[in-house]
Length: 149
Image (cartoon, rainbow, N blue to C red; front, top):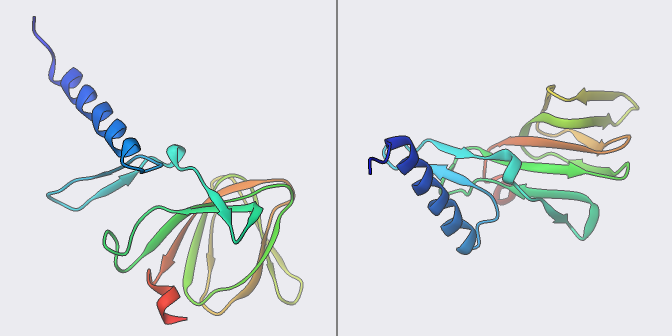
C-alpha cells in the first residue's frame, strides 16, 4: 500500500490539532519552528467574555513570547454592544463580519463593514460599538501596552 505525502501531512496536521486541543489550546495555531512564521486559523478562535460582559468578547491569539512587538486577537460585540475605551497603543482593526462603529468623542462615528480596516491612533478615547453584531481582528503596537499604561 502506497500512502501519498499529502495524506501523511493531513494525518499529522490533524493529530497536532488534536494534541493542541487536549493541551488546553482553544484554537488552532501553527508555528514553523525554522522561520518563526505563525498561522492562527481565525475561524477556530473562540472568544471569551471581557470584564464580565457577555456582549463584549475577545481572545488574544499571540503571546509576548511569540510576538514581543505586536499583539493580536479576535473581538466580538453582540446585541448592539457599546464599549468605552481609551487606547494607550496604536491599533488596527480588520472587520471579519458585521458592522463595527468607532464612536469618537465629539460625536463622529467611523463605520467599518466586512473587509474594512480601521486605524485607531494611540491616545484615542472612543466607544467600540455595533448596531447588531461584529467580529473583528485587532492588531496592537506595542504588544506590551498593559505594562506601559
